[in-house]
Image (cartoon, rainbow, N blue to C red; front, side, top):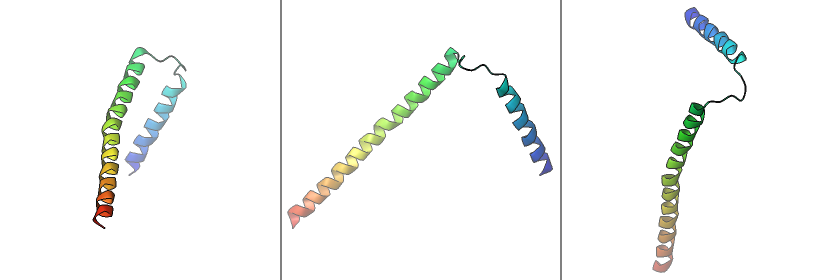
Length: 71
């Protein structure tokens, strides 16, 4: 357990020192490519989700209409 605490403490301080020297606002082209790819993945997952929700709503509406007609 002490070993784990030591490793975490070492990594946390190393990360803080690495972030302190990073220039602000100097993002390279690879950062923008990564963000664009991430956005495409999100949009690609939203399209089937919206289609599924629309199908569920249509199915629930059709059941309600069928039940109303049966009465």
